[in-house]
Length: 116
Image (cartoon, rainbow, N blue to C red):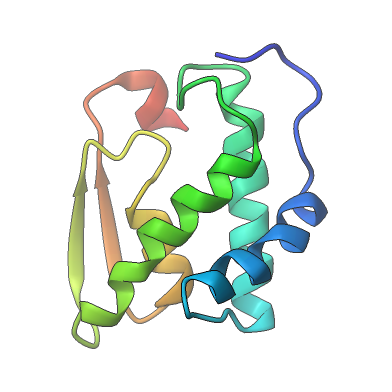
């Protein structure tokens, strides 16, 4: 858990995401970029209140999002995915951000993480 306050806003992540996806040979359209940036800002805020992720720099959330989203190309159209032990939503929520045709069901036994 990180100290509360000081979380990064969506604009912080929106600046980092295009280059991170480009380095992985992928792109995000503007609506997906906005959704991903808002999601990462929410994770960053939430991890300062509960133990969603380890205490690493906010920039590493971008790397986790890119890694998570890379699997999207292997999912069939309209796939239904269970994200077991989803915690902060990785990899399921980044997959859902880049593939809105995919349904993701997060499965998380820990109450605080599930409520996030």
